[in-house]
Amino acid sequence: MLTFAIPTYNRAEKLKVCLDSICEQIQGREGFFITVCNNKSTDSTALLLQEYSRKYSFLSFKNLDDHIIKQNEKGSWFHSVDMANSSWIWTFGDDDVLLENGLQKVVNTIETHSDLKFLHGAQAPRCMGTGKLYKADSLLKLCQQFGWIDTCSFISSNIVKGDDLKQAYINYANPEYNKGVFAQAAVILEQLASSPAALLDYPVVGLQDEEMTEDTKKRWFQEEDHATRYFYTLDAIKEIIKRQPVIPNKLPASFFRYHGYHLWERHFNDLLAHYDHIQTSVHPDTFEIIKGYVELVAEPAIRKSILAAVINLQDVIATLETAKSRLDVFKKVNGAIIYGWENIEMGRMSKSSVEEISVD
Image (cartoon, rainbow, N blue to C red; front, side):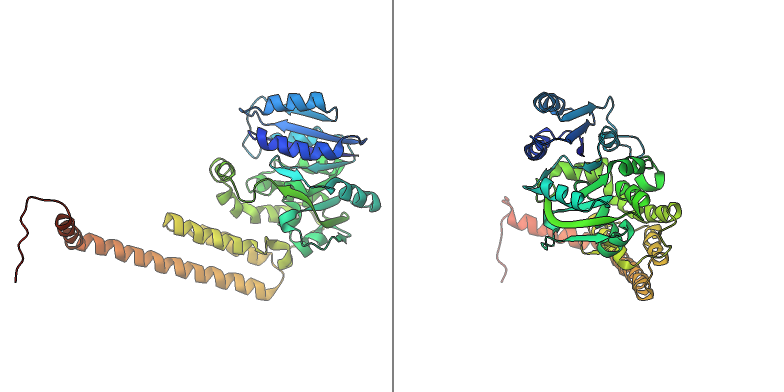
């Protein structure tokens, strides 16, 4: 009936917690499976998988011969899904957990609503707490209500008809999708845009870490460069529109919601954080990328606000750049005075053989 498909890399301890949470709810049931693809981990992941496959007949795994980090190659995400052979596939992150009664809630939903092809199982921190099922006759409409990224991008919330997810993953290597960070969300929307979909507002998935760990930060920002790749989200949306005729050229602003704000607002925050941290100029092309949302947003007032915000941010950063430049010049011209005074202060405070004489 359903397979949990888990990609993993160098998280043996977290993977164990994840597997235990799932195995506990699968054990004793018929038709439930786990497939794990190990992206050539260097820790004890391979040994753990051997142990669990001996212990649980419903768990199978695959070890990749090479560690794959390039987004346009078939890595552990792809293979964990490709290994599955069931009516439904639930993609799951190796650092997440299946919460108590989560599996039964999902099973009840997909059995009761047999027309569904996509189900979002809410992550506990993002659950609204209503306990309701929000159903739409198409995934597109669900994304327009709750936001495309919030609906499709969290791996452990995606429960998809097996054949559809496998068909969707054929396009995973599309360069317009995988140069950004939301390739999975892109291929799912392209494949299932007109299919019945629902959001289960019940906490079925939990996080093992409430805050991002140093290991995750290293993966996201150094190895996978998520900070830069966020800015290619617009390219993915344009590619979906081009490839999927049912998706209109202009979408409501709600489609672009992401964690309580909009994608362009996320970009603004990232630019400010970048400038605060690096103190270097922002390339003009970056502002042009954000302006690109204007052509995709349906509401005229929102389009105007995006343009106004881009102009304001450009002015603010330009002002900061000018002030920084003036400060650098001041330091250069007046360095002798400034640093000379510091030398006097340091000399006065340090122990010395020079006699200090009071002057009336």
